[in-house]
Amino acid sequence: MIANKNLLLMPGDGIGPEVMAQARRVLNWLQESGRASFTIDEELVGGAAIDVHGVPLTDAALAKAKSADALLFGSVGGPKWDKVPFEIRPEAGLLKLRAELQVFANLRPAKVFHALADASSLKPELVSGLDLMIVRECIGGIYFGQPRGIETLPNGEQRGINTEVYTTHEIQRVGRVAFELARKRQGRVCSVEKANVMEAGLLWRQVMTKLHAEEFPDVALSHMYADNCAMQLAKNPKQFDVIVTSNLFGDILSDLAAMLTGSLGLLPSATLGAKDENGRVPSLYEPIHGSAPDIAGTGKANPLAQVLSLAMMLRYSFDMSEEANAIEAAVERVLAKAGRTPDIAVPGRAVISTAEMGDALLAELPR
Ligand code: NAD
Image 1 (cartoon, rainbow, N blue to C red):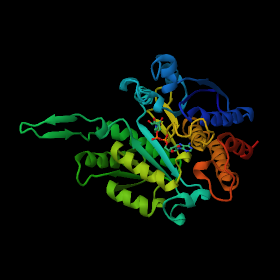
Image 2: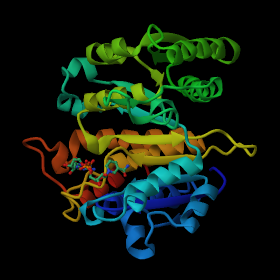
Image 3: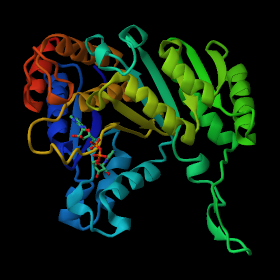
Image 4: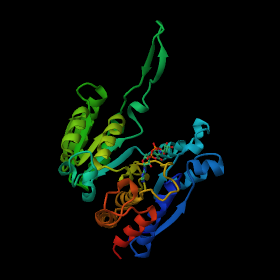
């Protein structure tokens, strides 16, 4: 069993607390079965924090997030807070957390459970058994580069400007995350850019090639242009193991990969920072879906993305692959035989609630 770890849970708004309640049951299973020992704390974030404290993330909550060994996040936002000032909207709490924790590598797995292969927009044989990971650089590149803005030219015309910019260091640190992940998977990294038309892409390719030769010769590295990668993801997604790419291309390609799996309610994510001097990696785990205000409070939310985010936390923050595998295998069995929440319902199978999905999952976890 691993040494005691400090976890911070931030359920947030809408369906966040509903799906987090099911993840907590899985945490209880880990503790009660003697597999792990956690000290668990909980904090408000997003609209829930605005209602109580007037801000989406208090300094106290941020301090706890910084000192926790890992952070499990739900989701934030909703129409109730549409009119709050832009700087303190619920989503600002999440953006501040990411910036303060300096988490720069967003990991989005696209894994297709056998029982859901027919929910994909692609033919089942193309996606059945798919298990790829997109590593997206998420605090640099064109979304943050300077100069940026909209300016008026002397002739009265306007010009919009954004700048794609990456330094050696920014490419290396996200590259290391991808190579290290590949070592725990099938040992293959595909680095994606547009080195044919962008200097920032050319530097990306050069830095990745050097990093590979110097630190990760045991991993197979290939390069692909982003446009071809989009085509290959739609044509033959199973060719990939780990894809590493910039903020902009990762944003687009990870949404494309997500759709291959067919359901928003099943997609977890992790965002990781750099190892500190004590070997601790700042990390935030969250489902990719939002707070789903349209179904909040109705018991219709699928809790599996939140539970799978917890499994990612066990694997990447605590090296607990056995337990992560056990949870993922339980999800696979639940999807194959239990009832389903409305988002993935199929004719002939019972439609069940968030809590009933939690019951079914717990019943499948090893004692
Ligand atoms: P959403 O992901 O909340 O919902 C999109 C659709 O998917 C909705 O129909 C919803 O009912 C459904 N859905 C989402 N998660 C589900 C689940 N677990 N089970 C079943 N169905 C599910 O996206 P949206 O509607 O665009 O945004 C709603 C709010 O969430 C907004 O305020 C937005 O800003 C916020 N948001 C937050 C995050 C985050 O916290 N990381 C991410 C995306 C959106």
